[in-house]
Image (tube, rainbow over all chains, first blue to last red; front, side, top):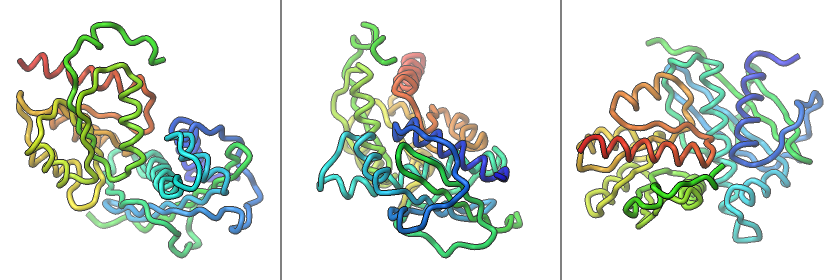
Length: 148
Length: 139
């Protein structure tokens, strides 16, 4: 069963993949893919009233399709742009999911997207989605509420 | 859709635009979308952070600035605080993935437009037209 946080991640990811990446998103999948099938990974750390990190892993076809759809870029020259496109996708998912999860009055600062993922914690929320013929997995780690 | 661009928009003077975003993909997407809207674009400048954006604004006449919030070196909000707001300065639209009401209210209270990512081409065009109309009203 999906948790509220997973539903928020799904809503935000669907919005980002469909409107920004121009990719159709299917249903959430119950059986997670092996990490080797999701080789492109970026993460966005955030800080403020809450701290945490969102990690986005996608299959190679999704990785390639993002830059092609967003900018019309393909071929070997597109490789650096692919990482930028994936990073922007993670940024938009994070920015859209957090207000659902933390409330719309929480001001947070998002760090620039970085390649790779931090070590996963057991308390992370996640969702994996069908994206066209590929997959995308979004994982959110949320630290304790900071004292104001 | 964006094919309903009307003549008055095309009659505007060419816009000198500054796009400030640490994501070059987003900068390219914004510029590409602006070109699709039918708005008359003149010179388009790009900056990867607020500090570089301020540098361009010191040197170049800019009609319209589209500014991200979360950027290295100098954030979009800090950049705008340093820039201030004047009738002769550029109209500013903050373009951010931050979906919180608090952030949007903060930007609107500074007198700038706010556009949430992801956005459709017509959303960008409408935000630009609103910003330019605000400029006209100020005069």
